[in-house]
Image 1 (cartoon, rainbow, N blue to C red):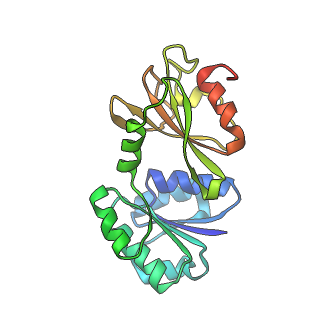
Image 2: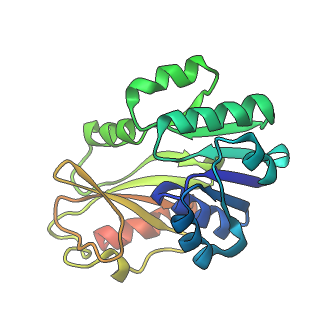
Length: 221
């Protein structure tokens, strides 16, 4: 499967790495030259410099043979343009778009972009869930069930308290993508020290869900 990702921010970067680790052919398009060069230093030929809002750039990136296009820039207008070009011009079978402002979701849907990911609504739904404190809870699935999105509460008794994300021994192919702390979202940076009350959002294959739970609970339950 060939996946084109537009936008080399945190979402696009981590998604590209995760997909590559799972054996997908991936190309990440970034329009900021400095950022594109930084990504190229790490990811090599899997990064392309250019503006994915341009038909020419998407064509050079191989949009005609892409199975999936993900519009993950930090601008909803750009994401809408990229999605429409991919879907209507290149006839890409599956187009997914990040939507920053929940008020824009209806517009995307009206214009035919039906698969959207709104990070604001996603985090809000997590905070609204009434679950037992300390529970490790599956909250969704990506890649048609191949990756689980997991929410884990950090309790005072959790063995991860006082440890940085980079210190944790995680199951294979597992990524801690974000931490919700005092109502604020913090990206899962390696030197972030986990505290009681934190909510961790992680991506992991279903077969490693119980192993991930033990990382946070310290038990096999």
